[in-house]
Image 1 (cartoon, each protein chain N blue to C red):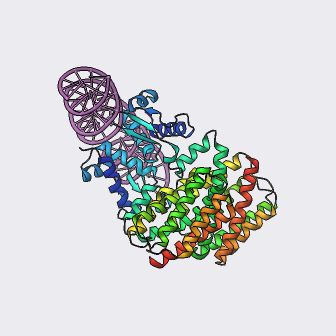
Image 2: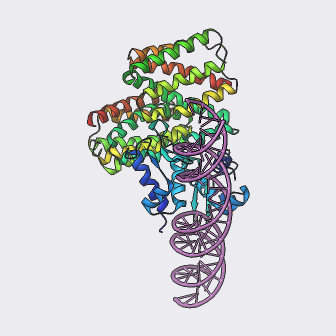
Image 3: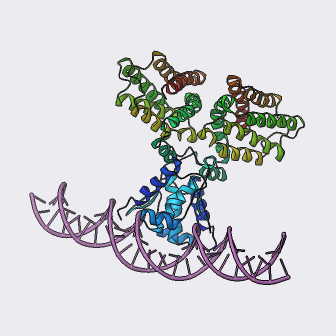
Length: 231
Length: 231
DNA sequence: TGTTGCAATAAGTAAGACTATTGTGCGACG
DNA sequence: CGTCGCACAATAGTCTTACTTATTGCAACA
């Protein structure tokens, strides 16, 4: 066998569960999976262990591997988020991720304003300015805009000094990319949006946490409105 | 071997990495772990797969299993949070979790106000009233207060209708328990705190999302202040 | 009807063989 | 002396098999 069997099987099972094709309560067996995917027991066991760690399944002796209810899923796991973005509930997932951003980013901006290092402040400001340039130029739907936008938000989350807030970064980036891929990003971002981004960056740069939080919140409210309107 | 070798090994390695005893860049080998813990290769492989899924390590052929930098950790994984709470950085972790709550809970309360079912609204209100009773009676440091407090926040997160917001529930509960275990919960909660909790529940019950968000935020700001003061 | 015990089932652990990948060092060649 | 390429060795990946242990369901019996 090649070398990606683990990853392949894990993604296959994960996507099927995330999509609901394998509904809660469904019982699999290691032997069954082994036969269905023609992989060895070791590979099956390792994949199932990872799914178990994500709260997606629960192996029990004499019973098999039971798919668990959604409540138990570690919905913030980047892999699970990817699987959900890959399925039919993609749009719904993008809305949910935007709601998550609305929760996280303003708070992250607030903390970043008091904790960011000099170079981080500098970098955030530079990214915001570039975003503004691109937006004004009608390049809101370009790959470069996406890259800068992703980098902008990542920098803020990283600068928050809170590892858990920063951990949202990866899923958020995927959501942005997903939105972009769906063609939901306008070529001309609204002036309000561009202003909010700039204001967030400026407030962080000068250490004004209240202003950073409120500007970021304003930006996200706008984005959430837009996403909801389009999906 | 008994039956908990997987769990035991996973926790052992996870805690060592979370604590920094196995620093980023440290290279292990499957054979080494196998020998050190006297478990079979299968068990080692499965544990390492789970750690890999959490972003804690990266196995590479001809090299070994390398411990990754913190940036790559899935810091929102409940297991990882537990490991960090178990280590020396416990206090710091509780503060970080409280910051996370400040981000998540007000937003969750806002959405809960528009999305909660009738019985959920009822339940949240009932829990808040019970919390108030207990708080007024000077029972803020009791196990029952903790239980009700945890249930209160869980209900709100669950009622937010966002699976990812709800997924924060488990780690948050652990943080509350941790704070309680450290004796950081006052027997007499401040009147402001009790009022904010009640106001949050009332606003959710009557569907007033703006009031729910702001009352929840006020409650959390108070808690964050207190936690920071004490840790 | 309830309870105890047995047997079947499926996961858990162990061990070993073989494969595939990749970093390193050595040697040949420029 | 340096650089390129190749062979070797180390280590994870996969496969297979054997054995162990927990659990459940059923049947026999009180």
